[in-house]
Image 1: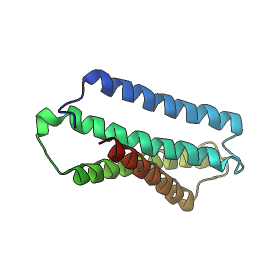
Image 2: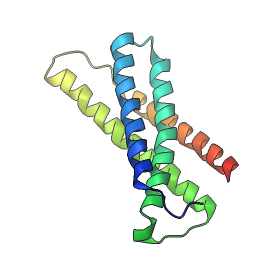
Image 3: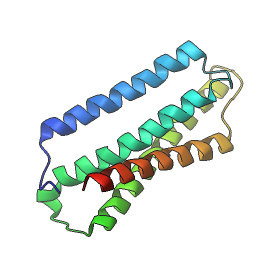
Image 4: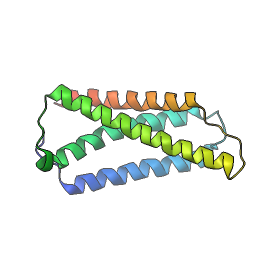
Length: 140
């Protein structure tokens, strides 16, 4: 368990996250965001996003350790990291929802988003976070 994580690693993780987001937009343009035939692309990126969010929350937790001095059992840390990943997933779904409402209200295009899509995306995000927790647990 690292005591702290250097700022360079946090910036590198932010870069990786930005590249994942950019890749989702590029792949969305290639496959067409208005088609249901590429659902597996969305699931892949949400799974990857859940894994990324887990490790990002872990990195932020260790980076800020000198400020909060929180110590917890290993299982409690994993729970915190998975919960943080779920929170990031919810924030991302709000972002997607706002984009969808823009398409409907401003651009007058049909909506493809449903609440079932949001829930499914959150489930895939959480699954990715659990797989990351498994990987993290095996490394300890």
